[in-house]
Amino acid sequence: MAVNACPGDDVLAPVESVWSLMSRASGLDSWWEAKLLQAPEGALVKGMRLSGRGGSGPIQPKVFFEVEEVDPARHRLILQVALPFGIRNRAVVTASPRGPERCFVQFG
Image 1 (cartoon, helix red, strand yellow):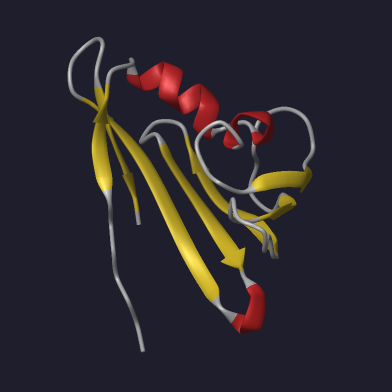
Image 2 (cartoon, rainbow, N blue to C red):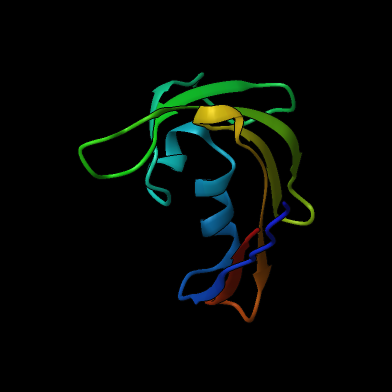
């Protein structure tokens, strides 16, 4: 069974500021619930592998990420996510400018 959901929202920040958080391993913890356990420093690059713990409750399963694509020109990041019980997710995160101080971020 396939499920498609692409939540998105306006962000009151320039697209380049948002991209700087999206495109660095150290910035990921600032915008998602997972907490990285292992991540290289610097910019994300294709093939990079990350691991973390998901969720904010008492059960925090281990989650593995592989960077499939980093596209600075389109402000797009694609991650292959491996969750418990064999669940896989191809996460596409994009940031689109909506003026000098605003952008639209979509995850899905």
